Structures are given as C-alpha cells and as structure tokens.
Image 1 (spheres, rainbow, N blue to C red):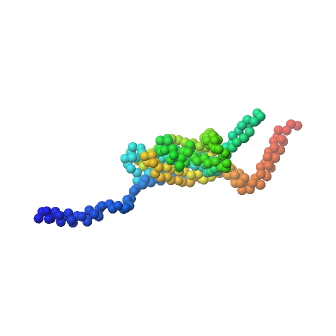
Image 2: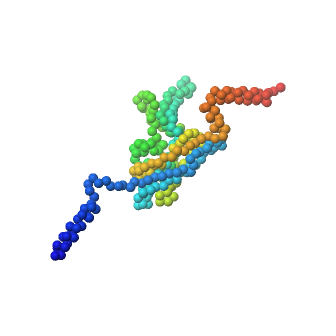
Length: 266
C-alpha cells in the first residue's frame, strides 16, 4: 500500500515538474547593463575673455553585477567630439633655400577637437582592434585620406603629423584618470575645453566596458556658440560678406587716416 501511494504521488507531481522544465528553443531573457549620462550645461558661451572651461559629465549604471562592480571590472570612457570637417596637412621642404609646401594630404570628416577622459588607460580596457573599430582614443580616430594617395607609404607620416599638430594646439586632449566612481553605480567625468574650441554642435559620448568587453554607449549634444560682438562679427562675415568687406576696408581707411593726423609732424 505504501508503495502504491508513493507511485501515485510521483505521478501527480509529474505535470508540475514538466511545467517547470526549460524546453529546447525556449527564449531566455538576459538583463543587460544600462548607461545614462547628463552634462553640467548644454551650452558653452564664448566671449572675448574666454580662456577655456571644464565640462562635468554625470552618469549612472543600471543592472550591474555587484561582484564585478566591486572588483573594478566596469570601466567608462567619456569623449567630447567637435564638429567634423575635412583637414589638410601640408609638408614643407627646402627648395633653393626657401621653405615651400611640396606635399599635402587631406583627411575626410575628422573631429576638429577631441577631449577624452577614462577610468584608466584605454589600452588596459580592451583590445586595440576594438578601440579602432569604435574610434575610441586619439590614436584610434579614423583618418581616411581623400583622393589618390599613391602607394600609401606617406600615409602614416601624415597621420602622425596631424595628431601631433592637434595635440600641440590643445585641440586633442586625454586624461586617463578623469572618470571617477562616486558611488557603486554613479560616476563623474571631467573634460577640459581649450580656449580655441571651435563653434558648432559637439557630441558628448560615454562608453561602458565590462571585463574588457564593450557593453553600450550614450551620446548627448553640446552647443558651443560665440556671444556679444564676436557673434555679431561672425554673423556679418558669413551672412553679408560684401557689406562686411566694405565695412572692413572703410574701417582700415579711417584708422589709417586718423593715425596719420595724430602722429604727423608739422
């Protein structure tokens, strides 16, 4: 009787167990980490006394693995990219004692400015191939030449020259310790904006890595505009170039005439 009761109980439990089993082909839901960012300002105003500025980016992670987070397996890279435009690099050579431009190369749609901060050196985050594929880091910005470049033997030379000039002018900058986690899921990043930052719509990008693997990214626009007399002159030069040219010539004539009156000798 006991054996019969045990068999009956087992048969009664079979439908319940079958309903709890995972069936082949059944989809499983995987929770992926999320990333949200915000900036301390959405617009940078450039005045005549502008000497550069610091931009602060705040971010939050969600659905993180607390164990991996505790042992530092999550990394964040924050980048501010300027407007993209073609850039030409020229090489001077000495001809009959005179330095002249002999060769040049134009790169297509490169960021005019590029400022990057990261939680550590990006070479320690992931593979160089992954950085190149996503264009993360100064040394991995895609520099595609325009037109015919011959056998390509000078391509690396011109690329290095372009990056060197941009860094010398403070337009390309990196900070390998500019991202700090202020709590378990919150981080803060600081980016330095140079005094000669270009006008236009810039893009703030944040990249999240976990254990050396790319997870997700977020982006926000940032406007950089001139204000005051600088903006008035810029608008006149681009909107009414003929009147602007005439006004510039007239101002030069008046200035020269006035100076001759003031400093003339009787």
